[in-house]
Length: 300
Image 1: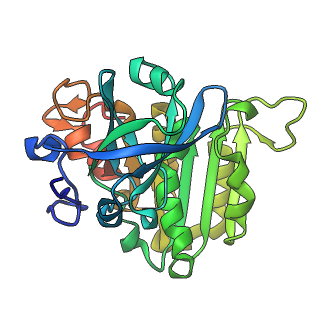
Image 2 (image 1 turned 180 degrees about the horizontal axis):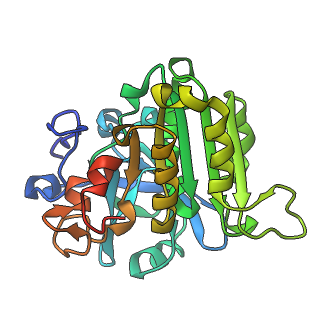
């Protein structure tokens, strides 16, 4: 098979392989679903391994990038990589069953053969955050693209300062990756979980992410801006409130990063569903610093 172009080979603001380039889709990697885990009633975690050992060793990606997953005869779609970059050709994709391809995936078993193209897109520049405090904020499915930069930080924990994760969902049954919360805390991570509406078995925080974020921002006061980088992933309504709070706390827009992967559909810049003027989320994103995102009309 033709060697896949990696983000390290292609110039760009944060380093990217532009998904719309025809050469990027000349071939795909043969891969196999090795494990499937139900996370909630709607989401499953798929562990996928490239079949060829040499290709698996060469495959590299950066946090925030995505791959195209193809099932012959069914279709293909872009999905954020949700695993550690150190795992190379062993990928984890968290997928919600909402369309033809994803509903088909919801019924497959391990051993199913799939095609993987990529990686594509811009990434979170976590390597430029060494020595900084890291603030990771996710709402709902936003924890999926955020999980990869989290693993990058955990794999190199001594290179970063304080690490805070603020994650919220509508209900406790919608929380993702609950089995890993204690593992994350073992890396000296300040993890705070909240839900909009609790139930009889929920003993954690109930309320909006912004309420927890306000407490976190007040903790460091004026020193926050100089030493903090933030990554924000979630629904559009969350971006405005959370990012505005970060800016008012003094964190520069260029140190706040967002993922707009929710806008992507075809992943190739053909369907035009993700275009914002002349900018295409799948070609020029999905990761943007907040300054860039704010200058894209109606991006968030």
